[in-house]
Length: 231
Image (cartoon, rainbow, N blue to C red):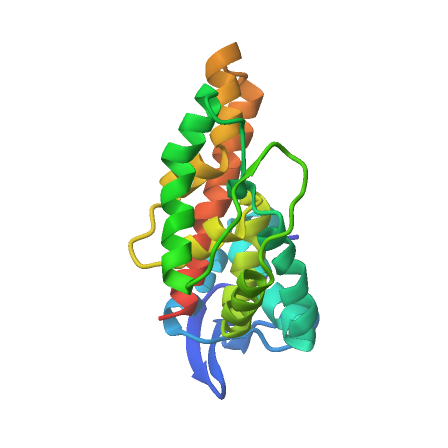
């Protein structure tokens, strides 16, 4: 599609902020007004539009897609979206470890344990650490508390969490990305610990490395989306 606008601005509107293309408010893909909760987030969305060239590249709209998901999918059915997110708490990757005494277990404990312990302290919960890959339920009180944490988030933060938890296979990592001063590269390294471990053992594959870099870029962008939504 050819670029069909010249000026990209933002404007305060009832309910928040909206990107304007030649003075006309942007709508979501579902046809709803794309109104976001903060001027910082609106500016980030406007920047995506402004960076487009003569031909519009849909791949350049990561943040727009996040906003649309919040408006078109989460807003109409928050309960379903929270239930879907909870599966990343029920089987959080950080809880599943190699057998004690194995070098991988030691590395997992070094990188993952501080993240789990911080989440336990932050939310007053307890996570079961599990040796192997056989599913074991997390304590009901932990799941109930995390459900309440998610329910307290707005639709835009939930949209970001949906993507970050999916990429990391971990709600703990997704929630850690919301904290002030969170380090996207460190969190992504934690999410990719086992893949990186295998690459160190058997050698790196350039396609896997390229994929890792692309997914880190998405994770970082979505993390910025979440933090802007909270300002």
